[in-house]
Length: 324
Image (tube, rainbow, N blue to C red; front, side, top):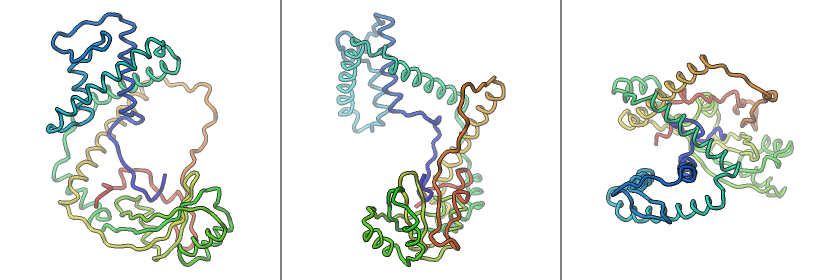
């Protein structure tokens, strides 16, 4: 994870991919039809028949809803989506003829998708319709977190992106001695190290508080390194600017953030309850290892970020990100 890139939050159950679920639902339908044989006809519901298999209004409406089609585009979109359903049914029919619905990998994927769908349905039922945060709650969060709003800072940065395999002691020494990112780029050119250039801006609302504090303590032009898996970022802090936002500007994001937090809290509480009452046994498990994480290495140790310990992964402590 790039420590300087904005994180996002989701209210959905982790691991659930809507496109995958859509495809899995279609496959489940095909498997069900193959197992049950003739299906009940729905008078007045069929829009098309593909080798005897009906495509219904309900199926089309589901596709329209998933595509989030606007009212003005529904006529044109309905025709396109109906043709897509016909194409999908044709492919499904052929897949069943070739017994692909019995392929172990397909069966496993269907069962996984089915379990995810049912688990999500249960969690959504338990969460229910949570009330939206009130005006007083939004204002209280705004006042409690000035670093995200009235005292928000914008960090402008330039970066060179290289393969982590090209990061070595010689390059680290070159960064320690360099006075600018251009000098580092010149060193890379001389040593024929491939790199890409980018510019980015992040605010104190986008970053973990600890990292924001480290950046605020840096002088302009400070160089530092972020290792991120198979790539390494060589970064220069170009500028720090005041970037405040008003309550009116921040309110929608704060409301959504608080809603997401409440949803997550309810889901976490339910999972905690279920775990407390369940008998869970770990069988044939290898020794747990530590996950690889991004690391931050200072180009000049006195003033650069101290490392991954300086970064918080608790989104509930980071405020409403993404405010422009």
